Length: 149
Image 1: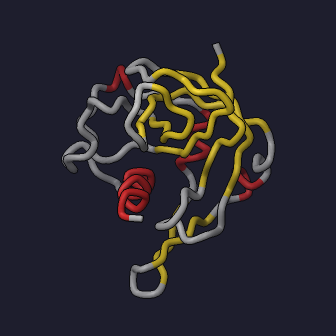
Image 2 (image 1 turned 120 degrees about the vertical axis):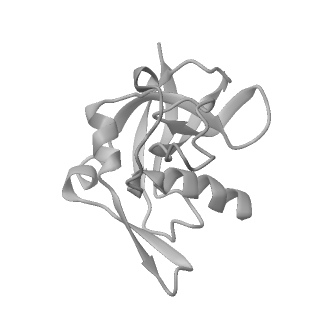
């Protein structure tokens, strides 16, 4: 539970308006990442629950094929990954330390494992939105994903 909460806190970092100090040439920018980045969050029950507020733009894409390019952020150890977070910035750009802000992330579930890489990958899957407590589960996922070459 603590691990999932930590990963999710990384995910919601796009709601933080910190001055980024990342290498701009590594930042992945696309219309689909902009759609993900427009999701807002609301805290509830004395900050013990958080819920995503989905706008119409992302709602109309739910349950449909969706494609994102990004960097793998592993959730579990291992060279082969089937479930991980996909980020707009590489893991080596210390977004954990706080001074650089936190990039946008989504959970990805692939049908076939991929070997971890520091390079970007492109994934196509079905966009899934969750209205559950975002501190317990990712509100935005790509499920049944496949790597696009």
